[in-house]
Amino acid sequence: MLLRDTIRELEGDDSQHSAYTGERGGVAMVLAPTRGLHLYLRTLETALDDQIVTDDEMSILGVISHAFALPDGVLGQCWAILRNQIDNPIDAVDTADHERRRIGDATTYQSAMITALEDEVITEDEWAMLDVMRRVMGIQPDENALIEESVRAMAAKVEDGASFVARLDRYSSLHPYR
Image (cartoon, rainbow, N blue to C red; front, top):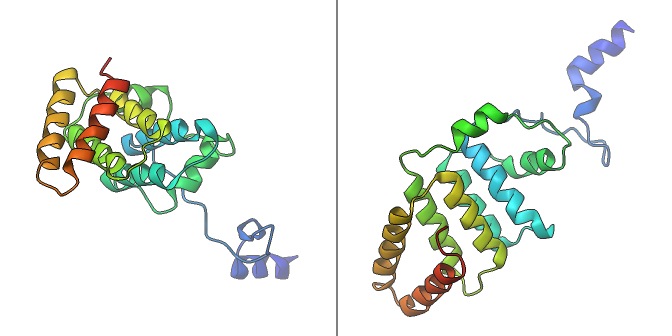
């Protein structure tokens, strides 16, 4: 028995091995209950409404992950949280705190909006993800208008700007600020 315990310590716990291949895997990371994680979870939850996360949706999630310096592998952990396979580190008190306005929210929202508008096809899930971000970040109507105007000004300076603005106008008409 002592030998078995020593071998386990040297090789690592059996729970660290993949049930499929038997190969050693990494230690599961413990996610901190940060605002970035909260926004990522809320946005991923919206993306998963149809049980599929597209490349375009992944791009928006990537903007959030980068903006809030979330760890590599956060998608897998968040997927497990949303499937109730692991505990959500964010509680009701954290949620209330994380949904207050912060400096940099408008910039992060603008980056996600531009990411969604860059490709020619914008899905309803992408629109919904932007709406979630706007609500969670507390983007106000006047800020939203300024962000859209800024995006229009940037689009005027690029080659495919007219098409970009048309997609923005479609977003604004289908998902007006509420």
